[in-house]
Image (cartoon, rainbow, N blue to C red):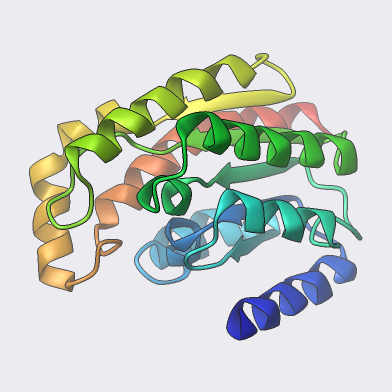
Length: 208
């Protein structure tokens, strides 16, 4: 909790500085925009005035606490990107509880950043050797189906990277094995950026 709290405090300090158009919230996948995904982040995302508020091993409940405690204050984002829930599923939380926790995060963002678009990414429900089990895939599929209903085509857009990740499965696994890191696949961040490009282009074109 100590390191996570330090990160939270640093995020709050950055939020208070303002001048942010896009903020990413999540767990280790989000954090790894600064490592595995740093080339895309530095060239494509950072210039849009972006901040990465990801914390390793964060659950949806922990993220909700962060959202309620000043990480959404001090700026008016055009877009808020979120992907969360892997920790909850891996520790065995019931799927309905996971959906409820993620929905609460979406509602908190709506309340505190009403002008922003929420780009919610559901967890890719694919099997990764040494990381996910068949049960995890089944449960994450159920969570994804439930979260898809949150999309309203306007304030909240829901994205599923499963098919795109599955199409590059072998490449991703090779990158993971070479890096010795479950988030060592550049493919993950290439697919994520491919999904983000058009929505962000539309947001920046239609908002002042």
